[in-house]
Image (cartoon, rainbow over the protein chains, first blue to last red):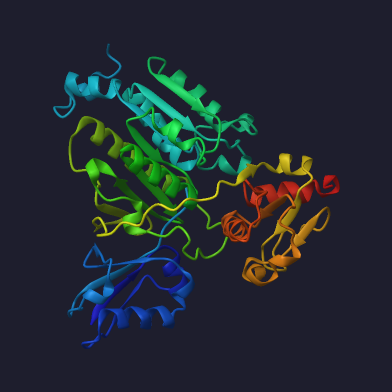
Length: 78
Length: 343
C-alpha cells in the first residue's frame, strides 16, 4: 500500500484529502493514470511528488510499499 | 535611531544587517490580499526602497482581506492608497508607486530597478511573465499563492536555483474554470507573512531560503509540508505570449468593441445587449469562423482565465485586435448593471 495525498482543487475533484492505494508492483505511471481516470483529473493541471520530492519523469520511477505520493496543483489566489 | 533597535538587537541582524535592509530595493507585485500582508512588514523593517505594482482599484469585497484599506477608500487606486498608508508608517524609506498592471511591455523596465521581487498577484498567467523576466534579468523572486485554506510559498531563481517553470512548465495547462474559489483574510495574511519573512532572510543572508523547495501550508490542519524540486534537465524556452490589451469595464462601455463571451451557455450573470456574441471556449475551435479577424474584439469570461485562452486561440487564427477585461467577475457585474449603455 502507498499513501496518496490530494491538495487544492485536486482534493476537490477527488472529494478526499488522501487515501491508501494498493500498487502491488504496478509501474508508477500506471498508478498515476489509474488515479487520474478514477477521478477524472485529465482536465486539471498538477505535479506529483513521491516522498516529498517532485517527479519530473514518472516513467523512471518504481514505487515501494509505504511510499507517499502527493498531487500538487498550481494555486492562483492572492 | 531607535526605530529598528529591537531587530538590530538580534544577533542575526545587528547594525550590519540593518544596513543591508536599508540598502535593499524590493518590488511587490500586487497590493491585494498577499500584498497587504507583505508590504507593512517590509516597510516597517526598513527596506530602503519598496516598489508597489497594481493597476486595480479597491472594492468593497476586497476589504475583508486587504486590510490596509479603509472603507471610505473604495474606488481608489490600491497602489497609491497602500503607498500613502505605508509612507505614514515609515516616512524614512522610499516608496515607488506603479499604478498599472504588469504586462509583457512594462515588466522588464519595472523589475530591473529592484534586487528582489515578490509575486503577490492572483494571476496564474502574470506569474509566468514575472518568472521569465526574473530569469532573464537574474533576479530572485518569492512566490506565494493560495487556494481556499491552503497556501504555497517558494523562492525561485535564487542564486541560479530552479524556477516556477521547473514545477509547472506549461502556461497553457488546462485550468479548471473561472469560478472564484473563495478566501479568508487570515490565509492570505499568513502566506504573505511567510513571503515577507523569506524576503528578510534573503536580504540578510540568514537561515535557509525556500529555494528548490515548495512549502505547502494547510491552515485548516495546521500542517506544513515542504516538497523538494530541482531544475528540469532541459528547461523549455520561455514562449512568447501575445500581449493583449487590458481594459476596465468602464473602458469597455466606452469602446465600440464586439464583446465575445466565452462562458458556457447559462452562466450568470447573463449579458444580452450590445454587440455581444457568445461562443463557449469549448466550441471556439470549431465556431471561430463566425467572427471576423478585422473586428476589434473584447474577450471575457468569469474571471479571465478562459478569456485569455480564447484570445490566444484567436490570435493563432490571425486575429490581431484582441483585448481582455482586467477584473473578471466584478467587471461582468459592472457591465450587467450598465447594460443599457452598451453600444
